[in-house]
Length: 257
Image (cartoon, rainbow, N blue to C red; front, side, top):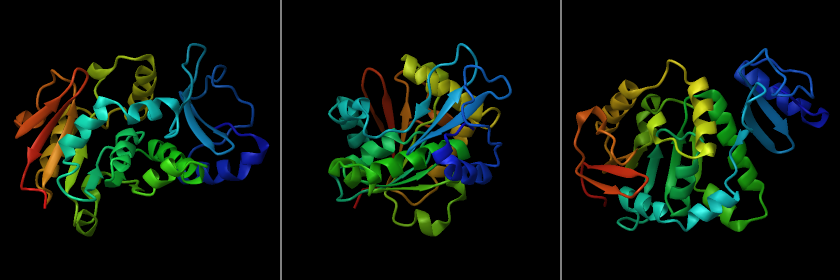
C-alpha cells in the first residue's frame, strides 16, 4: 500500500482492517517486485494496480466517470431494467449478490431500484465503498440521489441473515468469466479480479449461487451472461433478454407485486 503524507491515517486504518502491510509513500507499482498488486490512496480516491513494468493502470470505482455517464443512456441499461422488472412494481428491492465494482448496482439504483450489494472479497469491497463515498460527497445531485439507494454488505450473499433477504424482489447475479472480456479496460479489471479471487470462484461456484438464489423468497432471479454462454447449473430460464454483447437469463418464481 502506498500513501501520501496526508493520507497516512486513512491508509493505516485500511491496512489494519484488511490485514495488509503498509509501504512507504512513493513506492511505484511499476518498480515493485515484492507484491502482485498495490492499493493506492490519494485524497478521496482508492485504487488497485498490478505491479511490474508492463502493469496496466489502476482500477478504481468512479460512478461519475464519463464512461458511467455515457452508459446511463445506453440500450444496455434498458435490457437490465427489463430483466429485473423495472416498471412492474414501484421501488423494486434488488439484491446484487455479486457486486464487483458496483456498476450494475449503480445502474439499477439510477433506474429507481433500492439495491443491496454484497461483495465477499475485502479489497473489492473497499474499492466499492470508496467509490460510494466519493459519490455521496460529489457536487452532483444525480450521483448523490442514485448512491443514496445503494447499500453494501461485505459478505458472501449466501451468508446474509433471513431478515436482510425479507422484502427483496429480485436477486441479480453477474458471474464474471474470461470469455466475456473484450475491451482493454475490462481485461485490466478481469486480471485484478482473477488475482484476488484465485481458487475461490469459478463455474461451479456460480452454479451453486444460482441454485441458492432460486431457493430464496424472491419474485425473480436474473443472471447476466455472455450471449452464447450455457445456462448456469444447466437450468433453463423462464425467458431471456439479449443484446449483441450481453444476455440476461430471467428465472421467474412468481409475479412482482
